[in-house]
Each structure stands twice: as structure tokens, then as C-alpha cells.
Length: 327
Ligand code: AMP
Ligand code: TRP
Image (cartoon, rainbow, N blue to C red; front, side, top):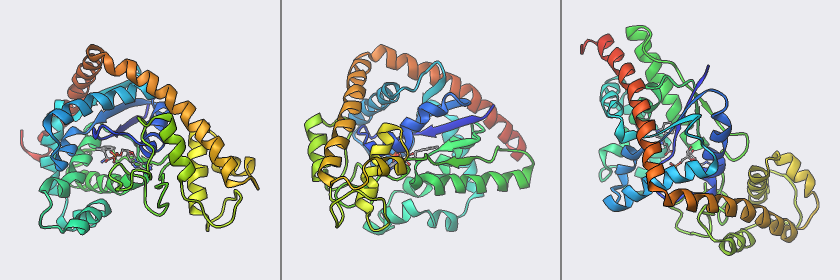
């Protein structure tokens, strides 16, 4: 049986890129093997969140996972900081990865190029090593992620292979798995950049918590390309992105959606897209509200999942310590 593992940060606010690119595909993945989904809260410290906000965001994120359909009876849902083995293995792995490798990570390069490398916290730089520890502790075969995280999974493969070569079988070498639709949902206002929570222009993203009328307004105002009718083409990146969003929410493929709307005007397509997205997000929001109120249930899910995860992770860590001579 395959082991599947992925994580979503507790930044509290989830957009449709996180939903289509990550959480929604996880619902299918949990039926295809032994699944682990977790909140990498240690990773989130690199933005130094306010303590009370972080505490609340962890609950929010677990509640979203449950609302979209991750089922704690099928999947292990846990919080990274509750499993001490992550930080410990991260330290060990730092000895098997070079500055050169970390310098090449595009997410780090993007963030540090905006504000200069000298002022960046060390944890932002070593972030991919902690991510490697997250993955390798559970012997994950498959790591479902959006496009932006693929490079980090590739680094994880390199670290695992390197240690396997030195010490013999240490780790399973994982494969990244990108979703068929929604791997890279772009900003609605600037379709050349990916949708993100930190987008300065909040009209560029649709948050799962947005009210229906806000969602409709954002879709109606989304930029379109030249021309006036729907057509799937390389010179229509804005339309391609909207078609992708429609496909993600309707479970159709992008070419199927493009066919359905071939020759239809942008206005009509946007109206129908808005209806589809509003209908689905409204349902998710109703489920979310009920789950988020039930703090006891959330605590139980986190506690049970984290204990199960800790048992597996500690065993793996003990084996590695033995191999490298610490015990
Ligand atoms: P983050 O919000 O950065 O913690 O990302 C959580 C998950 O959502 C990761 O698997 C990302 O690859 C995915 N993700 C983030 N932004 C997007 C986007 N614009 N399109 C598709 N997937 C995304
Ligand atoms: N870095 C990922 C993100 O920002 C979150 C993450 C942390 C993750 N550890 C992971 C994803 C391990 C997959 C596997 O989206």
C-alpha cells in the first residue's frame, strides 16, 4: 500500500489555489493508500505570526481540512510541532544538504530577492530541509503538492538518495504528484503571477471565506484577454486560468470546459463560473462553520492524529540515529 503525505500551512486564510491545488485532490488521495495530512506550524514561524493568531489559525486550518472532506477515520491529521521527531530529523538532515542546494530553491530566491538575503531569518533558508524531514519520517511514496512545492520534493529525493548511498537503506525516495487541474491557479487580476494570500491586490484571489457577493464581484472583475469569446489558447492566459478554475470546481477537464463554452462571450461564461464557485464554496462554508465551533472535536482529531504520527515518526528517527552512529 502506498503512503501519501502532504501539508498546508496554518496561515488561516485559504484561497481557491490552496483548495484546488492541494486540499481537494487530497480527498481522493486518502482513498488510495495510507494518508497523512498535517499542519506545518513550525514552518509558519518564519513569518513570526502573532501567538494568539497562530493558535487560532491552526484550528481554522484543521476545520477546513475536515470541511473539504478529509476524514480522520481514513487519514492521519496532525500538527507538526506536536511531533518532536520533525525538528530532530531536520537537524540531522542539515548535514546532508549544501548551501548551494538551498540557494537554488526558487521559493527562497523569490522571497529573498524582494527584501535582500541578509535580513531573512535562517528558518526561511532551511525551510526545505524541515520539509524533507516531514516527508521522510513517514516513508511517503507520494507527496501531492502544487507546482510551487515540486522543487522542494525534488530536493527531498536528493537528500534521501544521498543518505541511502552512504548508509544503506535509510529512506523511501518520494515522488511529487501534481493535481491534474489546479496545480497553479493564477491571480485574477494579474494572470502571470500565482494566486497567493499575500497578493497585495486582494481582488486577485478568491478566499474560501469570501462572501458570495464578493466572489461574484471578483470573478466579474477578473481580467480577460483580447477578443471577446472563450477559446483555449496560449495567448489567452487569463481565460485559461478561469477555465482551469471552472474545471476544478466542476470536476471536468479544461478542454471539456473550453468545448462547452466555445464561442460563448466572456460575460456569460463569467456569470456561470461565479454561480458554480459560489454554490460550492457556500456549502464548504456551512460545513466549516459547524466544525469550527466544535473545539472539542478539533482537539480530539489533532490529539489522536498527532499521537499516531508521533509513534511512526519516532520509530523512523530511532532507526536513522542508529544508522548514523548517534545510538
Ligand atoms: P501554502 O498556502 O503555501 O501553504 O500552500 C499549501 C498548498 O497549496 C501547497 O501544496 C501549494 O502548492 C498549494 N498552492 C498554493 N498556492 C497555489 C496556487 N496558486 N495554485 C495551486 N496550488 C497552490
Ligand atoms: N511547504 C509547503 C507549503 O508551503 C507545506 C509543507 C511543509 C509540505 N511540509 C510539507 C507539503 C511536506 C508537503 C509535504 O505549501
